[in-house]
Every structure is written in structure tokens, then in C-alpha cells.
Image 1 (tube, rainbow, N blue to C red):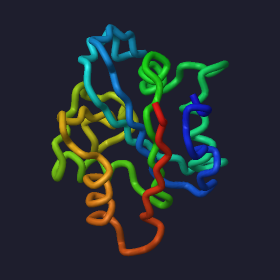
Image 2: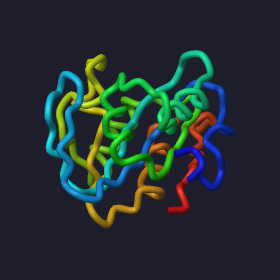
Image 3: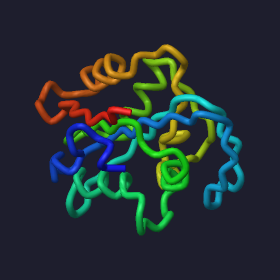
Length: 165
């Protein structure tokens, strides 16, 4: 999938931080997702919020999510991205995925489609996959949330990599 992006997500920072994957499900999708079992994923827009503070930082994690060949299905989001791909990636160096989930739920037209999706190791979030209301303009909404959650530092910068398709 990485070849679909105008600016390569591989060029993003090796720092740690949060990232947002934007996905589009064109039709109802029956998807078996690890221990969550069989999910009926309605057509629509979704965002997945994750973090990458390990070796290679954001660049390593984002490139893993975009790989289509030879990737083991490990995390919940792997099952969904294997089925529909990724439309866009946003990276927020120094960002916190849980703060973003909380703010997006409070300030944007998002909802939790599957409790526990992507948050099985999280004590505070109902899920890290959110469905996005039709017509919600994500770029401005996410920037407002980042600004509200940020501490005013450049670490909260939003870098977007979008698919031209």
C-alpha cells in the first residue's frame, strides 16, 4: 500500500508518538478479528488511533501497517487493513493515542463501533477504532483536537500522508 501515498510515510519521523490511520469500508464487511470474533463492519469511514514508542518509532510502525506482503496479522487493526487498506496516515510526534481517542469522542462526530477493538491492553479507552460520521471533515477536526490536547510544543505537529486514490 505504501506506493499509493503521494509523500511516503516512510519519510516520517523515527521519534515516538501517536498515529491515526484513516480507512474507508466500501460495503458491509464480515471480518473475523482475533479474539473479538466475527464482526459485521458497516460501510463507512473509520479512524484507528495507535502509538509507536518502540524501536524505529512512528516510521517503523506506520510502514508495518502499510505493508501488504508478508505481514503477520497480530493486532486487531491488521485484520481490517488487510481487507480494506489505508486511505491516509497522520503522525503526531510525542502524541498520546488515548488523549486523542478521548478528545475525538468528546469533540467530533465519532463513535465506538466495536468495544475493545485495538484497546485490549488499554485501561482507559473503550476502543481505538472509531467510526466517523458522514460529512465530518477530519483534517480540521483532528487538528483542533491536537491543539486542544497539546502543550503548545511542536511535538504535537500533525503530519499527514494521503493516498491519491
